[in-house]
Length: 119
Image 1 (tube, helix red, strand yellow):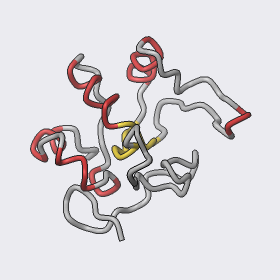
Image 2 (cartoon, one colour; image 1 turned 180 degrees about the horizontal axis):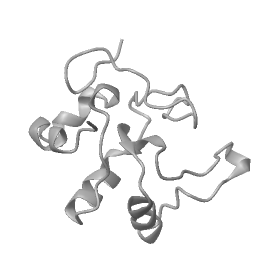
Image 3 (cartoon, one colour; image 1 turned 60 degrees about the horizontal axis):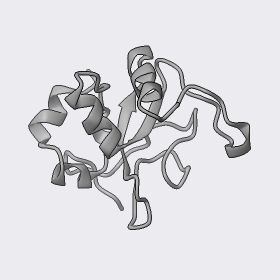
Image 4 (cartoon, helix red, strand yellow; image 1 turned 180 degrees about the vertical axis):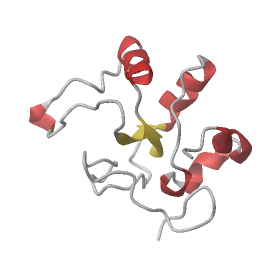
């Protein structure tokens, strides 16, 4: 069973909308997940705009991929590199730590992640 950044079992990030590399609701990963969809992030209008402006439109539905488009308040398994980029621009969304994959701490300090923890 995959672990989260706090050392416990990885819990579901979102099943509505269904998220994750495996589309099973969890921010789990494996070697062929090149984007590392490992951070369970709480979407905000500001972050969705930032992501769209940086080449990844997460708010527009794409039915051909069964993607409903995201809105403020949705949780989503975000690519690690996108979260880091957003953090560097002061736009990083909050994180559900229990649903964020343990591998993230290899790239982002746990203390930094905790600053963004959803209350």
